[in-house]
Image 1 (spheres, chains in turn cyan, green):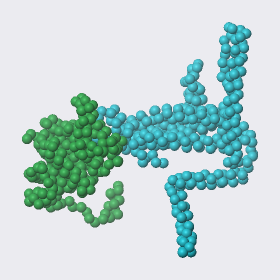
Image 2 (cartoon, chains in turn blue, green):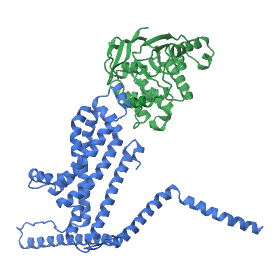
Image 3 (cartoon, chains in turn blue, cyan):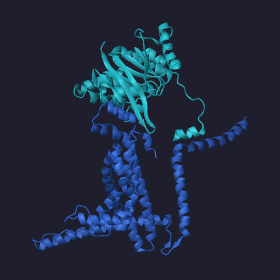
Image 4 (cartoon, helix red, strand yellow):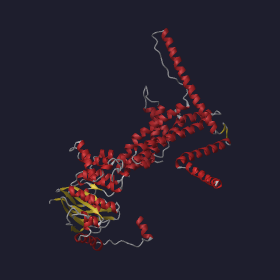
Length: 332
Length: 277
């Protein structure tokens, strides 16, 4: 009897392992395991390839070099912040000392002019891309709705859109720079000129996908919904508010996601070319610097740029899931 | 009873690249208040065009439509439409879909509380009060069409236009919906024009069946009075000789007098190409 029992357990054991295996590979586990496998493979390939590429600035940076740089860059940021606080404390002390000597002295506060760290550049770039994108959305969505509603307006504006859509940001940049420095003259500017330059360049390039998608969404609206609106004889504005905008929300979001991706790509290029503060400038500065660490710092920036772009897209996706009635259009 | 709707000598010509296409020619029909009219005919004969002209979603090339002796030129809620594929707004709940209509039509006549009551009354009428907060994509096809009907009824239309309202439903649901519609009609006694493909549906629901000839230049072929007493019961009528006589009249019209001749042979390659072009 014991023999049969043991036989059974032996027979059952491989089955249970197999069951465990399939249970492990449920869709949920797959969602974690498969991307991890992909990332590990990529890291392996990267470090192998990196070790076999020699440049005038040393070996191509591999994953470990990037990891080191990440901690370096954070350290640099912290030291810079400490320097800054120290500077303000010193300034305050100096001012108080002079005021004690001479009560009529008016204390002057000067801003700290230290180098912007990697983290500062990230924040600058993020602020610029979001403001440029927002400005583009404010122009593009109403324009897209107008074009989508009127075939005549579409025929009039479409050639212009098609011509400006493929223009690279780098071509716009000199013009934008010259126009901004000629037009944006104020003794105490609210924003730095470089910020305005980057912002307008981003806006000019990211406006088109939103205009095109919004107008497409509006123009291809289900005719039945238009008929419902007609039967209810909704006034034009109510029609736009109650029917047109909700109906085209999925298309508007598709356009917004494309635009935000474009905006982020354009911004980095514009910052590099114009030396406007931001991640692009960081990359360019490191390239010009040409130290043994430069390449690994640039590689770090590349990865951070990618991660931020990914994060921006996910944020839009979450927003779309929250705001759009059509959940199926917010899958990927 | 007085004539409420007068479709007067309507012609409809669509311009096409190959020249004008006359869809309707001399469609003339007078409808009394409280009458239930079915428009029946083969597909493509222009039934929907007639309905769209009454709703003013299309403009007749010649002739026109008089509602209470006044010509109609714009679409309006007094000629509410129940569309074939329900056309509920998917971003609004069932309640909100009806609310949009009620708010528009009665904004000066009802207080908010009265509106709420009126919307709920109409949801009750179509037995959909249990699903008022559901979105259209969360309910079945028959339920969607009930909400579509409730929305149209909530506008208190002078004429209710129904464009194959049950065409997209399965046979059982359709029978159920027809019973519901008869029950509602018994209560409200609306003036209704309904397009249908279904002979039984036409005989069961209508006071008059308007049979249309085949296009192009389609027009009204025959009009059949249905004098069966209300309320009607589909099971009892199945044995009724008058019901069967009416049914065979419609069938004779559709399949003998206006037989639709369609090419059964598969199109040759050449024809296919010209079709694509």
